Image (cartoon, rainbow, N blue to C red; front, side, top):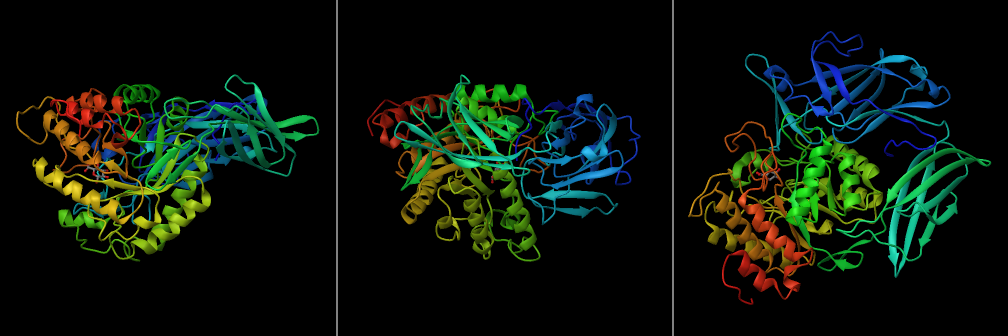
Length: 611
Ligand code: BDP
C-alpha cells in the first residue's frame, strides 16, 4: 500500500491535532460527539487522562473532528488514510460508514469522494476498538469481573495501548492513478538492477524514471513492469545509506495524469550457509528489540523520539533493530532507510503461546494450536497481518528479513500445520527476503517443530535471568549447550533476537545481584563470551532498547526494566559496555576478527590475552 505523498498530481492534508474524544457509548457513533474530552492524535489515549475508567476501558473509543476538503479538489478523488487504528477501526463521514479495518499496526484508506464536496466541511468520526481475542493478532482474552466489568488479558507483557497512535490524512489523487509499486533490486558487479512493477487503477501507459540522490535521471523505461539497470550504482549499505527514487508517471497522450515517487535503495540480501549477506558481504547484527513506547503518548508516533532513538542507536554502535512486536510507524521505516539502519520487520503475532500459562515448566494447560484456542480463524488473521506488513514495507531497503511471529509455541503439536502455510505465503509475497520467527526458550533444538522452514534461527534466551537467576556460571553453561545444539542440528545462521536482564537504574552491588546495573552488564558480557564461541552466530539484539510500559504483574515494577536506556532514554551502565563492544565490532563477526580475543578481555576489564 502506497504511502500518501504530495506530488505534482496529488495533495496531502495532515489531520493530526486535537480531536473530540469519548469511550464507550452507543455505537455506531454517527452524531456529534457529546464529550468535553479532547485527545491528541497521534497518541494512544490510555495515559492522556487521569480517569482509570478510560485507561482500563475495553471496547470502542471515539475520535471526532471537522474536516474541510480543499476547494481545488472538485475533479479529484478524495481519500482518507488512517496510518493505524489499534486494534480495529471504523471510519464515518458524517453518518456514513466508509471504512472498516482489523489489525492495529497497519494502514487503511477509503475513497470518500461520493460523500464530500470540494470546499465543504464534513464530520469525521473514527471508532477504535482495543479488544483482543483468540482470533485477533495479537491474541488475548476478555473476561468479566464479578461486578460486571470487562477486563482484557493477553499473552504479551507490553501494555495494550490503543487509539490513533499514528497520523490521519486527507489526500487527493486523480481518477486514473498509480495504485501500487513494487521494486526489487540487485547488484551485478558495479551495476544495479531494478525490477519494477506498477499497478494502475485502469489500463494506461506508464513511464518510469530512476532519479539519483541529486535528482538526476539515471535510467528510464516505458511500461508497467521491467528491469532497469543503473551503471556505476551507489549501493545502499548498512551505515551508509544511499537512496534513489522511482518516479512513476501515468500518461494520457503527452499529459501526465498521475505522478508518484517511491524512494528505494539498491542492495541485495542473502543467506548462504551460516552467513547473512548484505550486498554479498557478511553482516553481523548489533542492536535491540525495541518498542514504540514513551511516557504519556504510549505508542503514539513522535518525531522527536524517533530522531533521538536513532541518535542513541548510532552512539551505542547498533546497526540494526527488530520491530518487536508489531510493524512500526512508516516514518520509522523511512528514517531507517535514510540513515542506513538495518531492520528485521515483525508482524504483531506475539503471544501465540499458551505454554507461558504453564509458567517455567513450559507445559501448556491447554494446547496452543486447536480449533478452540488458536485455529483456522487465527491463522487467517495472521495471514492478513503478513499480507499487510509486506504490502506496506516491501520497498524499504532497510528491511532485510521478515519475522512472522514472536515466541510462538513452536514445540507443540499443531505448530507445523499452523506455520507451514504462513511461511509459504510469506515467501510467495516476497521471494527475496529471508524469513524468521523469534524462538521461545521452551522450544529447544530437540523439540522445536518448525525451525527447518525458516532461514535464520532467531533465539530469545534469558539464561541468567528467568533461568539460573543470579548464577552466571550455570547460565553460561546452559546457554552454550543450547546454542551448540541448534548449531549442530541446523546449518543455518543463528542470532540472539532477545537476551536481557531487568535493571533498576541506580541500584548497585559488588556481587552478581539481579536488578543491579552491574548485573545487567555482567549478564550481557556472559552472553557475548558464548556468542563469540559459536561459528554460526550472525548477531545480537539485546532486549530491550529502553524500559517500557507493561500490564500489571508481580514480575514488573512500573513496566519492563530490561532497557539498556531508561524510558526517558538515559543510559544505564551496560550501555557503555555495549558501546565499547559494538563500536569495535563495526558490524563484523567477532570470531572472524583477529582482535576478538583482545576484545573479550577488554570488555571483562581483564588483561588482554589472545584467545
Ligand atoms: C520475552 C518476550 C518479550 C518480553 C520479554 C521479557 O518476547 O516481549 O518483554 O520476554 O520477559 O519472552 O522481558
